[in-house]
Every structure is written in structure tokens, then in C-alpha cells.
Length: 433
Ligand SMILES: *Cc1c(COP(=O)(O)O)cnc(C)c1O
Image (cartoon, rainbow, N blue to C red; front, side, top):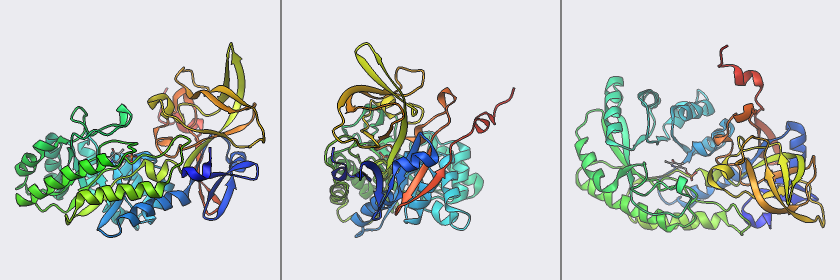
């Protein structure tokens, strides 16, 4: 695999794998030595570069890139993107609290003003905190939710700006667990019913319909579904305006996919194609565009660095047992996801062998790769699981009472610990005996 042509910020320097960016490089081996393993390493340079790609691609129209916090909610990454002018797409009160913490007291108000709140099950408490924070808009997913939002807004005497998240019934090829844009999915309000819902709440004193939103799923590699969905949204916006609604934002959601395999990949070309598709659908519509990329900003920027604890043979099969496990990175177990695995020390002419790479957790689903051809690995070797920046630590758990990994953010050759490893005391702290 040619790492340089794959859009990843990891490359071989000398005889070892480094995190590269901003004209500098940092050896993963030295980070593993300093911070221990398993360890998430992110290229801050790449995250910033990706955000700029979207911002530049839409520079000719009013827009805000609202980073989908659930992809990786590290405060250090939120800070980086907020500083870059990004807004945030949140799905819980916890994520709102993260945005506020990342912003700091001085900028909390400014940053929450760029927050959109998505999700099918917002609670009254979550609505209250978002109303108090003065977020940009609620992306509402049902009529019942809109009724509750109206109640809370009236109670707090704070007007709630909202968009309906419409379900455009557009098919996008991706894993069934992360596809959301078909009427069979739990997300959004059927687009055919949306106009009636907007009409029903038009006169409400504490609600203001400011937008229409859509999100069709995740890890979508084609750009046509984004265009198809946006075309339906634009048609709806025109109808709503004809009905007298003051619709100012259109939210295209997130979901643009990255390359997890060994194919060449140009992120800049992908963003360009995506922007052209969205722009074609928008046409001359005068509205502030919101987009909510998550994975595309942070996915390829991250690697999970892990040490080989043991190797062993069971009959025909050879197993490489790493100190990282499904609790640290669940994508292979949950979505049958593929992650490239690269030895940190590159041995010239290393023999390839076919192995299963597995973690120590007591589940047969705890694997990172099956029947994978890799250079021969030995006890004590370091490996990097690539493209682990999105839905890695944010989907991690303490299963098997394992401490979650530390996280390091690299910018221009400087590594910064943005999350230290947990302690057992912290894990038990909420418990009582
Ligand atoms: C998860 C999610 C996103 C981000 O999806 P990515 O595939 O990570 O880009 C954006 N918007 C909404 C509403 C989401 O649920």
C-alpha cells in the first residue's frame, strides 16, 4: 500500500511509521514509548486541512461546516475545529457540554451559536440546556418532538429555531447500520408530510421554522445521493417559502465516505465532487448552507497504535494478540469494518504470513482482521490500525474493565497529550458497595 497516495497522514520515514504534517514528522514508536499503548494518535494538521477543504469548496456561498461531534468528541479536536470557524452538529446534551467546555467561558456563547442539535430522542432536559445556550437550530425529527420543544421554549421564554429533518427516501449504498435516508429508517419526518407539519406550527409564538435538514447516512462514497437528497430539500424550501415561511438555512447533513482500504484516494478531489453535487442541487437558492461532516474530517487523521502481546498458533491458524481490543475500536466487530494494519517498524524483505489480529477481550467478535496477510509480527512489536480517528474512541467502552486508550494530537511535529489514560479509581468512582 502506498500510504502517501491514500490521503493518510502516516508515512514511512527511514524504517519506521511516522505521523506527518505541517512539514514535520513524529515517530509513532517514540509516542508509544512515552504514552504507552494502546494509544490513539491524530494528525491535527490533517483535521484542519480537511475542514479547510470544505470551507474552500463552499467559499462562494454563505455556509458553516458543523463538525459532527459524535465522530470524535475529544475536547482537543473540538477546540481545533472551533478555532477553525467550524460549528458543531451535536446529538446529546453531553455533546453540547463538550462544545461549551472546548470553547471556554469567553467563547462559549459564540460557539454554541454555531451548534445544530440532531437526534431522534432529545429529552426535555437536553432541550432546556440547548435553549439556554442559544444554539443555532434544533433539527427536529418528529411532530411529537416539536410539540415538546414548543412547550420547553415557552416555559423558558426562549424562542426555539428549528429545521425539520426530512427523510428524503433516497438510497445510499453503505453498511445497513449507518444508512439513514430511507423511509424504513427511524430518522426524520417523511418529506411528503413535512410541509403540513411546518404549516401546523407556523403561528406558534415560541417556535421559528428557520431551516430544512437532511442526513442520509454515513460512509457514503458516491456523491449522487447527496445531490438527490438536496434537490428534494430545495424543492421543499421553495414550497415553504411560498407558504410564507422564512427559511434561511438548508442543512445537507454529513456522511461523506473515506477510503479504508488500499486504493488510492484523493480527499481534495472527493470534497470537490461533493461540493459540486451539493451546489448543483442548490442552484440559485439563497440560503445559508450547513453541512455536518464527521468521519471525513477526522477518520483518516487517526491511528490506533497497539503492541503485540503474544502470537500463537491454533491448528492451521496463527493469531496475533494485541493490547488493543474491541472496547478500544469496535468498528470491525460492529460493522465488519476493514482497517489497514501496518507494522510500526518496517523490516525490509519481511516475510508475509496470514494471520488473525485479535484483542484480549473475551468475545469471538474481538478481532481487528481475519486471514490478513501481514509482514511477520513478533511479541513486543508495534502495529498501527489506520483510519481509526472517527468512531474509534467515541465508540469505545470499558468492557472487561479495561482502561480506555490515551489520545495524542500531533501538529507541525509537536505531540500533545489530549487525553491521558484512565485509572481504575476513576472507573469505580460512581459505584457503591
Ligand atoms: C452521524 C451524523 C453525521 C456525521 O456523519 P459522518 O458519516 O461521520 O460524516 C452528521 N449528521 C448527523 C445528523 C449524524 O447523525
